[in-house]
Length: 101
Image 1: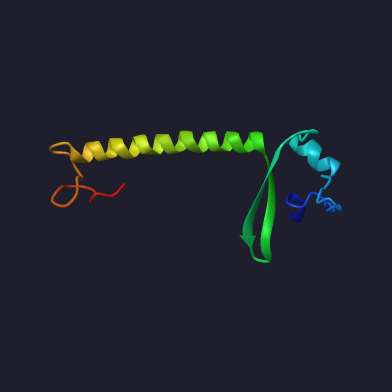
Image 2: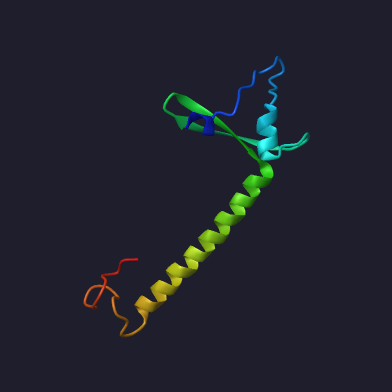
């Protein structure tokens, strides 16, 4: 299972540069000149460093925006149905669900 996460190692040079192992570059389609985003997150043994292709991050953010827009639309539609006169489950005094999403 560990080899799903550990794909190699890299030493930091005197100028702070690292060389990504060939298998990592090939697996993720990383080519010379590619921009990688460096991220940090807390972990049990300290902070972990994650690299992500900038193009992948942009795609992920677009997907998150689309998903959040769909969720907003669903929430607004549900709120509109609750506010409609005679709508079932519109909260206290109504039948059905009590104002839950």
